[in-house]
Every structure is written in structure tokens, then in C-alpha cells.
Image 1 (cartoon, one colour):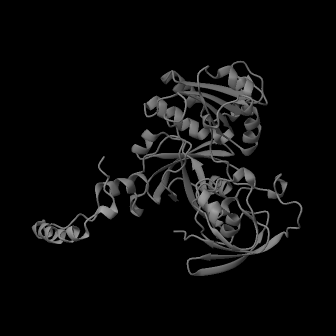
Image 2 (tube, rainbow, N blue to C red):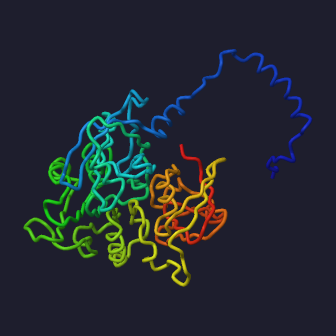
Image 3 (cartoon, rainbow, N blue to C red):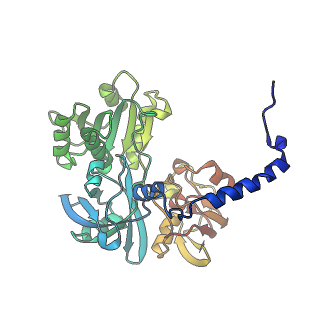
Length: 401
């Protein structure tokens, strides 16, 4: 049996003789300059822009605590078309509020087809005490210029991984990605059965109800079940979304469960879903969002004294700055409050965009937000968006554009 060629079998002298052939081919080659950019590079930049510059074209008010903002391209700042996306994606919004430089992720509630028409819609609900949501709901108006990222996120449907039926479980403003899913199914951009269990306090708190009623009539692949916790009404389920309710509407064959809502809903439903004995791959969570009150978490180091204030010395490229920070705030929150524009997108420890290297000091990374890659764990990197200082620390942060 002939041996397979390998590096040691190469005749180096014969290889050197190829110089003459290379020179001949170079001399015979066309003098036309190579293109400065190939089509694949242009396509990549179109689909995955670092920044998109948009203008608010329309605002719909649902109640005093929730609004939908529609954005269109802002050619005056260089954006002539919006990037396409898969339903379930999010956009990160750049803000500056009272000197604090912030980013906040929001699921896109409009359809992929609308992006091709030059429109994105974000539906934002007021968070009590929230800096960003209160600023946007109280100050944004039609005509305002906004800077956003390209579409991001992993909360998307993949037929090679997910079941042909998705049980969507939404609470409050967690309905936004499912609104995009439903519209994409109706448009033919997605092909799966969506059974949506949507929890609201009362009927008047339901977002997109008329839209979902129309989408159910438009496609037999869409079914919406409204669950009211504070009202009992005919045609609505009552109480909370539980494993029993999921069993009631789930098909007998394999199905996926997609969850999007507040952290409290996740904690409750994760326990409920365990009783369904599904393989982990069938259960998907959207971004959990920022974590607060770290000292209430079960794995917080309660056996030691942690000061209320610490010093954070942050190094970005060749610049260094020291700030005073609360141990109740994540490292990212403290940097932003001091006007330091650190890189961040998901704010849930998942995307890894903010990963940074602590040079000294001790930090706390909550187990429930632990999504670091093996390489980050091995070399000591953390995600500042969900990491809290326990002592004075020095940290090296990637450059934020």
C-alpha cells in the first residue's frame, strides 16, 4: 500500500525549481489592479453593520408605560438601507443620558419584510427607576436621530435544532420577538407552527392584540392563547403559565419552548418546565436582562465583608481612569455612570462583547448569568455587564467605538 505524502516527503530542491514557473506566470498575468473590495465583503457589511443611523418616523403609545418607536434610515449620516434580520433578533441602542453613555438591547417587534421596506420597530416598556427606558419614553419624539447596532442575538428559529412546533411563552413586553416571529410566519419568511401563551395582568395590558387576532386569521400556523393573572374572562385562560398549561396546548410530537419575559417568570417557569422532562436543546431563553441586587442571590459570598463602595481603575487602550463604584452595581453600570463608553450589547452575559480582563482585585460572577466561553474562563476574563466588584479592582476593557 502506497504511503500518503507528507511534509517530510516533499523534495525541497524540486520545490525551489518552481520559482521559474512562478515568475513566468506573474509576468504573464494581467496588469489590471485587483478589486479593493469583493462582493462578499460588501454583503457582510450590509448584513452586519457595526452602526446604523436612523430617525424616528412614528411613535405609537400603548399606555403611559409602553410605546412603539418606528425607525427609518438616516441618509444624512450615511445609512441608506437597514440590515435584514431573522425574527427574534434584537438591536442595541446607544444613548447618552446626563453624561452617562449607555447601550440597551431591545427585541425587534417588526417583521424582517419591514426591514427590507426600510423600517424597524422597537416596543419599549417603562422600567421603574430605569434610566434608559424612562429617558426614551419621556423624551424621544418623531424626527429624533438615533444610533443603533445591526441586528444581533441567538433567539431565532433554526429548523436543524428546533422542533416543527414552538410553544412561545411570553410575559409583558416579552411579547415583542413573538410579534416578529408571527409576522415572519405570515409573510412566509419562517416555517414553523407557533403556539403562543401570552401572560398579561388584564385584557387591557395585552400588547398587539389586534395584530395577533389578524395574524391568526392570516395563517393556520399561528395560535395565540392569552393568559390573564388578574382577571377571569371568557375566551381567556386564567392564572399563570404553568407546565400543565403547556401540556394542554403542546403537540404530542417533539416541540421547542421559547421563553421571553421578566427574570421572575424565568425562575418560575424553569422549575415548571423541569417536570416536562424535555431535553435541554428544546428550551430556549431570550436575554435575561440586567441583574440587580446581587447580595440577594444565593451564591453571593455572604461569608465575607464586602464594602459598599470600591475603586475601579479601568484601562482602555492607553488611557486609564479611576472611579468610585457601588458594589450593588455591575462593573459596566459603574463605568457608564461615569461617562466611560465600554463595549456592550446584550447586558446579560451572553454575547461576550464586553469581555474584559481583571488585573487585580476580586469580583463576583453570578452563576445564573454564567455564559463565559471556556477560553475566557481559562484566562480569567469576565463579562462586566454581569460582574460585580467585591474589592478595589483594576480591569482592562476593550476599546469601545
